[in-house]
Image 1 (cartoon, rainbow, N blue to C red):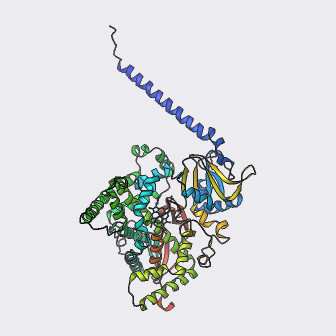
Image 2 (cartoon, helix red, strand yellow):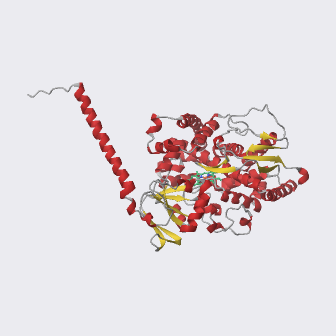
Image 3 (cartoon, rainbow, N blue to C red):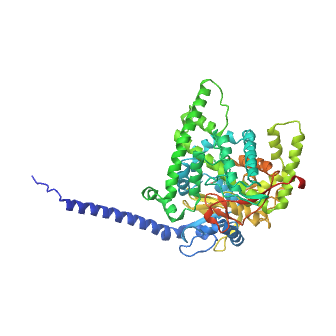
Length: 570
Ligand code: HEM
């Protein structure tokens, strides 16, 4: 019988080394083939290469021209003038053809077709913060979640939130009132509160910070029956956890951030400050979310057991009803339920606050518009104080119907959309129809675009909103009258804008956001006058936020000089 000689430790080590070497060589080979395919083999067969568009060097990208709001206004305009409403640009290099279109028919096709999904990179980035919330869902799962939450966003449900909107608007008004003109140096500032500057008559207030607090409080109560009380002070632990997490995520991702999207293990091995903040914040948020869900679930189950029909239509109640559904195909798991809470808190507060802050910015730059709007609102307050009805819902309905307020809010949302753009990926080869033909690189005219599986499509929300070919030569001007004089183009987007997108993934909260903005302005405008305090620039991370020119290191903020509206000038 042959005897097997045991291997010496050195031989074992050599064997392990050889095995590792083979694995590394195989992986490198696979990686090299992937790179070769990506950069050399696949691009000549990409149908998008025939489209007109800006040229670039081998590894030159057009990301800044597409996504930096300080450049994108010009680039979108120039490209549309040079190439038409549909063109290609370069992603990570000349090999990476990406499609962009401002053509209504093409956009409608892309945003309504199940072929186009959010890329896994976007979903992974948002998923790290928001879990598997609605933003990360597609197909049937997404459709049924939209169905569950739809009642929370009906006109009736939103109107029912009037007392919450008005209560928080008045609290905000009173907080600002305290900031002017009495200077109170002893008032302690929280780490998130900018140092408001007083001159005895008026104060420079970071309206973005305050509006974020107001909208956070509102979605907390309206959506989740949870009191953050952030207008009072910024000490509530869940509020602080969210703020820290989103502030950290809001910084430009940088090379490491991008690499982490592709290789999440990097974050585990080399956690940086952002990942430490995110992990700690998520722990706080998860613990609080679980308690909130347990309490609400107990109430809803008790309601069900007593045979009562569900009364509440708040987001959390609707989600819990889906969670305790007797039909397993309709049931939302506990884990997914928690992910939805974070998603709705984020989506429902930050974007609205940013939109409102931009609106106040435009009012501060346009005093004539501001005083015309104030007059319209003051007249309504006069009528309401004379009216017999003290129903706050009636007042809110009248605010909602004010024509100039409606025009101002829409115009601000057009000119400064909080979401700069969206991105989709084609999950199979497709043909996109166009309403306006384009001239291809070989001189032929095309009325449709061939796109292959895996290609990225950029949806230029801001580009469409600002395009002179859609809105006319004054497209960059803040001109609310365009909405009153019927000069607005018919547009497939919600509220006749691209701001909330459209199609199955469009914003379910658009009516909520517009109503909330109108009510807050209707409370603030009769009391305050806004004028510019600093030169403001846009910066685009998750949302397009305001920054003070040359003070980017201070983070997003919108300082505005706020004075009291003087009764004698009424
Ligand atoms: C001015 C305020 C707002 C703006 C500009 C805005 C904008 C948008 C946009 C552009 C999208 C689509 C993103 C994409 O297609 O990739 C979206 C989705 C979404 N928004 Fe809003 N939004 C606002 C307010 C709200 C509010 C108040 C809520 C909830 C209370 C909300 C909840 C959501 C949700 C849940 C989605 C995901 C929808 C889905 O994937 O099916 N948004 N929003």
